Structure formats: structure tokens, C-alpha cells
Image (cartoon, rainbow, N blue to C red; front, side):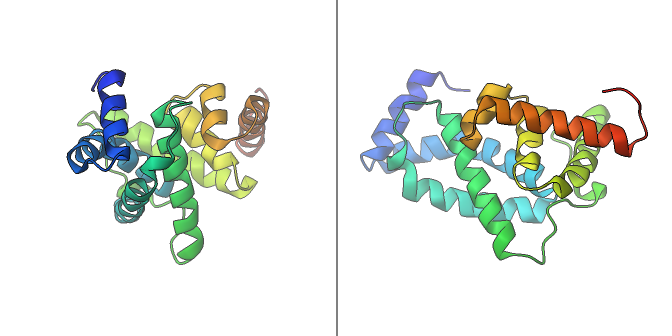
Length: 180
């Protein structure tokens, strides 16, 4: 991973129209965009479509990044918006795929198992409404703090905390547990 100062230099140059700098930014963040799209959609084909559209949006909107927050925060928001728009315009696609469509990022069987568990969790959470799935993916899937997830989703940190609490509460009830 490149140091932030190098990424900042690429971003500033790309914003001025430097195509080589944009290529560096794109190469740097493509894997992150795809990984997030895969966690969002749950299957490879949909993740590829979402990432492709997000890549086009990145090229068109890179000038809007203002350096007042982390680039990853801005990038995640771009991918989230793309995924939401994509899902709405492609109602025939289901937001959560069958477990066998998940490809582990590593050869680690535990990582693959964790990916399947995350998709099962997201399937149950999807019924709670908009915003819950995003919170789960960012906090549990990407390891963001509640504050970081709030920045990405443009909501209060307390909203993320409440959503995660509600998810735990509903899942505990659904799974027949008597503890939170």
C-alpha cells in the first residue's frame, strides 16, 4: 500500500487531468472497490458490474474529493451509492447471493467460512431496512469503527451504534438466544 502522501499526490495530479496519476489512483483502489462490492452484493458477477460502474463514477467525480476526510471514506461512499443505485435499477438481482458464490480472498478456509457467515448475516439483516446492511458490512465486514462507518454513510455515530445494537437484538431473538 502506498503512503498517504503518495496517494495524495496522485489524487491532486489526477484532479488536474493527469491520466497517468489517475491510473495510479485506480490501480491503488480497485481491489478495495471490488472487495466492498463483493461484500455488498454477495456474488462475483454482480460485484464486477458494481465495480465497473463505480470505476466510471470515480473517473467522473475524482475532482469532487476535497481532502477534508480520508480518501477511503469518500471512496466507500462512492461504492455504496453505486451499489444502492445498481440494486434499485436491477431488481432481478438479489442483494445477497447463495453462499457458494462467495470467493474467499485468500486460500484460508477460515476466511472463506467467515465470508459465508457474513453473507448469511447480511441476508437476515437485509429485512431490517436500508442502512442496516451498510452498517453491518462496514463495521463487521470491513472492520470500521462506528465513527468511521458513520463518516462513510453520512450519519451520526450513534445511528451506527443503534443499528448494530438492533441487528444483534434481532439476530439474538431469531436464533433463540437469551443474551445480547
